[in-house]
Length: 213
Image 1 (cartoon, rainbow, N blue to C red):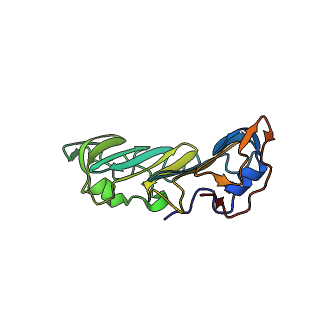
Image 2: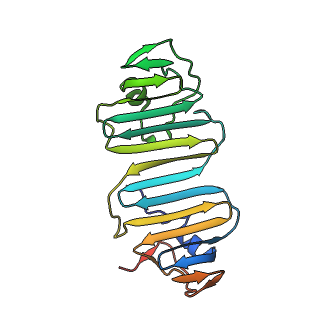
Image 3: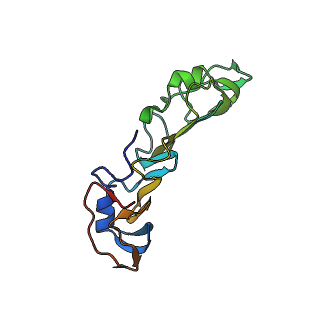
């Protein structure tokens, strides 16, 4: 089970974001404001009930190419990769494959959500054309999972328990110099109310995150 977003030290530490951000807007449990340009330029950690998502920056062109996407939802599998993955069929219909493969990049295994053999070899491909397709799986990869790479960003979404340490939803994020934080129930201490750099509660948060129930 992954730790709560922002509960670990680092650029997306919830305490660091709450203490150091110059808040433009904050209301009760969420807000956004200005902070330093830092590495990574784009990143987020999000818990939304039973869904857990993570996004960060990466190389524009890596071993797994420029862009790729893999999703499993119940018995359906979707896959896309540009350039195509090594060994992926050039064309497939009702799992009948033809014309060999024009693939040249590695399958995206970041995060360990998917095994290449389960997706590319064991899926019954309803259709597959050049770089993308959809098919039926054996229902042996969980109810839902997704991972992606889009040029300089990569991330994933997976299923986790509805509640962790009494918290149902939590988010920390940054996009260039814009930083955001949200949690339900609210993390304390937080600004409570903030507008245009003024904040009602100026107390500093200590790590780890404290939650008022």
